[in-house]
Amino acid sequence: MKVAVITGSGGLIGSESVAFFADKFDLIVGIDNDMRQYFFGKEASTDWNRHRLQERFPNYRHYPLDIRDQTAVEKVFMEYGKDISLVVHAAAQPSHDWAAKEPFTDFTINANGTLNMLEYTRQHAPEAVFIFTSTNKVYGDNPNFLPLIELESRWEIDTAHPYYKEGIDERMSLDHTTHSLFGASKVAADVLVQEYGNYFGMKTGVFRGGCLTGPNHSGAQLHGFLSYLAKCAITGNHYTIFGYKGKQVRDNIHSYDLVNMFWHFYQNPRSGEAYNAGGSRFSNCSMLEAIELCEEISGKKINYSLSDQNRKGDHIWYISNVEKFRAHYPGWEFKFDLKTTLTEIIDNMAKRDH
Ligand SMILES: NC(=O)c1ccc[n+]([C@@H]2O[C@H](COP(=O)([O-])OP(=O)(O)OC[C@H]3O[C@@H](n4cnc5c(N)ncnc54)[C@H](O)[C@@H]3O)[C@@H](O)[C@H]2O)c1
Image (tube, rainbow, N blue to C red; front, side, top):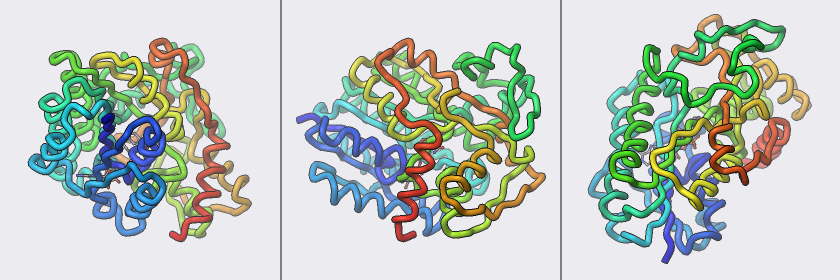
């Protein structure tokens, strides 16, 4: 039997992974305890998504356990052992701001939780491919010290800089920078995943996401900006942009395109590799540009305001260079551009009852 274990299976990336891999594996084991509801409130609960998966995929089996609970996690690995050929580890505390509220919770989920997943994979399914969703926040605020230029609707990097053409690559330093506590707990996990590849020879891959997005995000003010923006467009709720005059640039990758990267990696895995994985030059926008596009698609005005105060450690301009991944996996390509993604999010959001 071929089994895939997916943590954070109710979340954006976890649920996309379940849908993507359901017909490629005999059994999908999903782990998610809906902690997103604890982090961001009832409106951000991922329970609706878990129900959707259980209805849609008969070979999906859900375990509502906490990845910090070593006994419970090990039990799952003991149950399926070497049948496990893929682990997608996407469960996390995902917000900068929230991490500062409860540092112990953030660190034990992001760092210790990742260690639990890695170590039980090593003990019970060492041949499995292990995929980890890291973040561009591992570079801390280093991107903010690039030569940036203010344009009418966005910040942009100097055209003479080597990052202008394709964006920021994996050689950017992880040191000498403010990460936020969230960034720090993700660095710990990111380095652990690389180390289980480099030191133990396991097939581990780290994907440092830009903004990950798609219709199955349970958007909250503190996490999932496109999804939350779409929600504000539909409900008329107020949206606050924090700092940088709304000109901060993010690259956005549809959850399908990211999980398709995982699929390519799974089929031809390497050890201890780290990849920047965002929308790149192909799909990016400033907050102001996102609002304009959202208004164009939804036909509704967004009720927003600009706050002078930026989020600590927040990026002014971040565009991922995905050329390293492309060089290793030339068969992979983007499917969703920004407009298609946002249209899909808005259409789906309008159909959802919350
Ligand atoms: N969404 C983004 O913009 C973004 C950007 C960069 C990196 N990432 C990373 O990608 C991964 C997936 O992000 P996402 O957007 O799908 O997040 P998400 O919040 O939608 O999904 C994460 C899921 O993990 C679950 N979870 C949290 N703590 C848990 C625990 N202790 N035990 C079991 N389940 C737990 C949550 O309930 C949630 O359903 C995370 O590691 C995140 O840090 C996300």
